[in-house]
Image 1 (cartoon, one colour):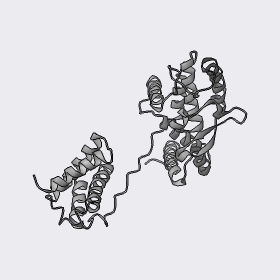
Image 2 (image 1 turned 60 degrees about the horizontal axis):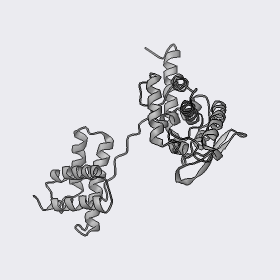
Image 3 (image 1 turned 90 degrees about the vertical axis):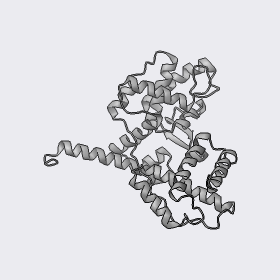
Length: 293
């Protein structure tokens, strides 16, 4: 075993015991760093920027996904930081190596027809079915995050102004408007909830009368998506993406959508403009007589 491998083993132990990373994460770091060490033939002391750039070129030539390359480079960069911090090395050769930019993937969005099929596929005669329809309507009509949804309590609902108070990222409170259909169903649901639990607990409960979890919501949505014949993967965030995209498609202002979503930066919201532009292009190609050769 080359002596440098001892450094890698020590780093793996550091990740496991001091950083409390999972076995899977430690293994991923270990494999990524070992791949790099094999490329430089374990010459940690003499490897410089040029070798690192050649390694990155090799990763690109193997056609790894951009995000995989970013992960591999980050693993090696952090390994070098550890070596400098523990005084194994004096200088980090990664200091002047820039990270490749991440790929920006457009989020999956449902059409308005698909959303209708998803919502109307819920049977509301029983309490749990009504609960499911209510939180689906609430996710789509307000665009709140799933964690914000499951954290709601009955006191957070304002029927007079048709809005809910949510606790967003960074413990920031915001008020989210809620659609009329969702509010009507929510009023019906909360009457039954009060009869069942006294309205003292969470707004959305599971079959054991305890707070519904984000994972529980995900599984329920998956079930109804399959029932509606929707082929793409549907998550609570898919409804949030659909909420924002449909607002922009119908002429909403980007700043308003930013406020509704609770985004700190407008740049985060701008991804939805790309989705709307794609829809405009499709509509143009279908409708304009000179759009195709």
